[in-house]
Length: 86
Image (cartoon, rainbow, N blue to C red):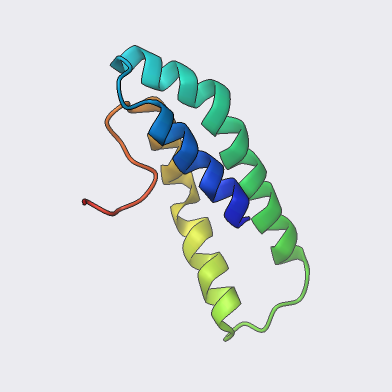
């Protein structure tokens, strides 16, 4: 999963000099499949039994709560895949 996240950021780094339309096009082609695969992996983890009060369970719940907003990254050329302003 960490490699998937790294690939999303590598896509972001490629786009430093492209136009807004190019950002969206490349993100649709490259980042969207990575995000979809990442969500599928997390859903697969949910199928196995995880202790409800474990840190992994909390992290998965947090990710799944924010997963729909990852699609904003694909359609909005000014969005970032993280919430780090710097």
